Length: 292
Image 1 (cartoon, rainbow, N blue to C red):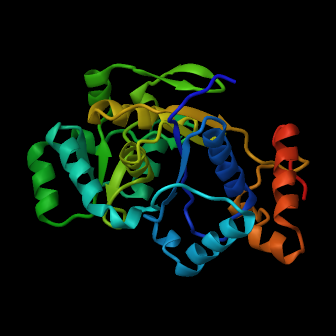
Image 2 (image 1 turned 120 degrees about the vertical axis):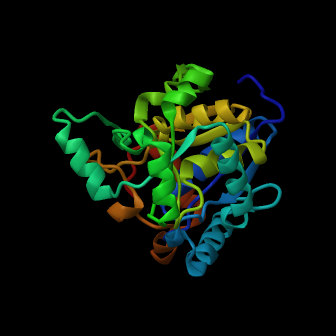
């Protein structure tokens, strides 16, 4: 194996429920890649979502990680302590003319998409048709002055005009080309979320000097958005490793919302840390099929 000295990986769970085996797989991939090259693996708590601001789940997460014997390097980064950083980045994007306020409700967007007949669709969801991007400056000022609820969207056509279609490298799939407009104008902030996942993860990876991002294959498409943000913000571009997802014998993805086995439940059932870790290695050998 070619050594990559000085690499930094990270495990970035969102504690909106008990840590489950999918989380554990991500943690192991990050830790093992770092260890294989004499690097560091950092821990980041992604708790911007209010559902992830549950002290009980956070305490359980630390307890599970300690029980498994997983260690991390350096200080733990917590996103809810970084709102000022995200606001500053949003202001920079506004200064560049890349953000615009969107006053559409979810139901209005759904109706607009339906009216388009053959609605553009992507893995990340229906593409926003750009309704508020076309509002006049006077109309925008009037709505803002009236306090109309709104989100802030990234104008991906302007982004693409500014940076083109840059590349990134995936350790499993090779060189990839970013197409900023592929998934439409994504939301970067709203009243109850000072920063979206897309904005926070890009800013935080740069702040922690993460050189290698290991995460599930379900986030592969999001890298187009993340690479676009790195381009307009002048941030370093890490390498990516999108690993296989855990699935049951029927091929269904194991996830928190699907009742995947939590680490706490495996502990209560009498499994040892070694058995849990070995079961995940077997799952990887089987292409992600897991059946503890």
